[in-house]
Amino acid sequence: MIPEQPVKLSVGADLSLEALLALPPSPPAGVVICHPHPLYGGDMENPVVVRVQEVCAALGLATLRFNFRGVGASGGVHGGGVAEQEDAAAALDVLAKATNGGVLAIAGYSFGSRIAALVGSRDGRVAGIALIAPPLAMSDFGFLEDTRVPTLAVAGTRDQYCPPDDFARFTAARPWITAAAIEGADHFFFGKLFPLGEAVSEWAQRLSRGRQAR
Image (cartoon, rainbow, N blue to C red; front, side, top):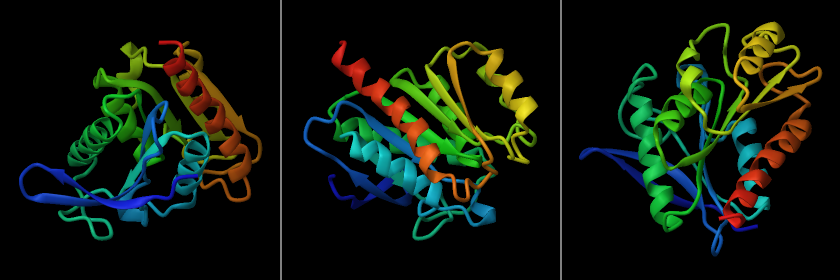
């Protein structure tokens, strides 16, 4: 597995974000990974974010995880979920350049899932989205009503921020979403990182096959 290397993401003229890039030779796809809420301790070292990166990298995909503005060594201050969309878009730009215009996907966990959905649903380069523990009880995901980007949605059956009934309704209403319910997992996937990784692996393998079918 290709080790990650530190890189800097430029957002506009005066903002720099810290990031880690894993870039194998001729990757079949690349995945940007967005971390959970910065105001509640979320950063790119979160265990769920790391698990997603490991799974994708093990399959030979390029990966880019980063700290949103105001987190860690990234400049700026928290942008309330609005400015963070610029951060994720900048990450996609960097990964697109690094992979020479290869297949792109974006994944996000909790707060990061909403950012991933917002950015991925309107960026025509994005061929896949992964929403991990989308906080349906707290955030509006109705904008995905008209999105047709192949999407994975993963949540635990004991997730208090993504109640099972809400999750079932959300995914059933959107046939382009593949749903994966992790039995017994809460919002943080304590003790459930392995089944989470299995669900993400299936999604990542579909990204690889999509590249091969081109």
